[in-house]
Image 1 (cartoon, rainbow, N blue to C red):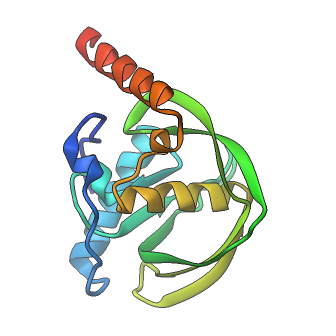
Image 2: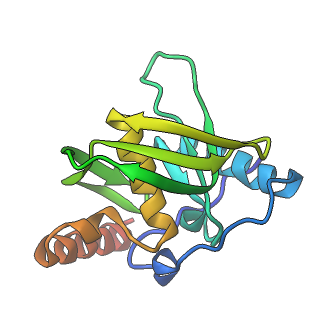
Length: 169
């Protein structure tokens, strides 16, 4: 396993649409393992492959709270089968938009289908933080960042702040 560089705005790769994976094999599992190690090191709770420069429809996630046992999750080719009309606001942040947080309104519940670490098809319902995180990460697969859900002014301010932080580093 290896820690990979996480791309940050305004890197144009983050706006690319990721391609579906043909199958979950050892090469893809190695990518997933690297992504998980990278996410834990950042630290974060979710990471899409495009954030490490790989335009594949792959996500890793672990929403276990501090002090809880790790619960790594792997998603290849995730898709939303159903989303509730009811929405819920949640303050989101992103490893590709460091130190920027803002409230985003998303469907409160979704039903998803994906291939797991073994390549088996899974369907499950998501709500709460799981629903927020899976939708946030799936946005990445379509070249959408959480700041794209904000007003143009807030989005531009966020990008400007990230650029300023990068120069200071």
